[in-house]
Image (cartoon, rainbow, N blue to C red):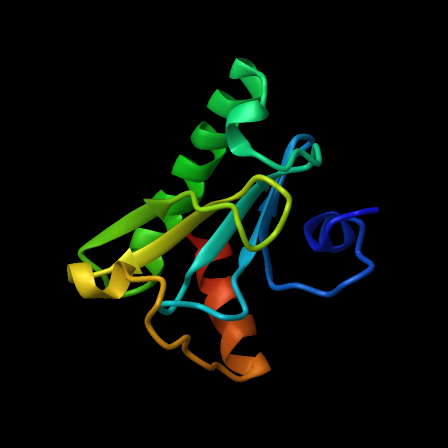
Length: 130
């Protein structure tokens, strides 16, 4: 059975897409810790990130770096944090979370809510800075 992320890649579920290439896909988290919180995934459906082949793991991180640089230019933050948790969706993914203090990287914090229009605008700003 396809993961929710595979359904997003295939266009079966809408998303606020940031970027994609032949192997990777990046989109806004709809339950973000901060403005611009982005998920970066391989198109290859693999449950555990460390089950990816070395070349796939390294290319995923290089793709994530490109997104993180654009994020830093697009939303107010001191850094863009990186987290790999992997329990909530059985598809390898990297969280890129813009933050200005350590408390903002706590995944048990209440999630923020943005309107569809706001998410569209955030995604457009990030894409512009790619």
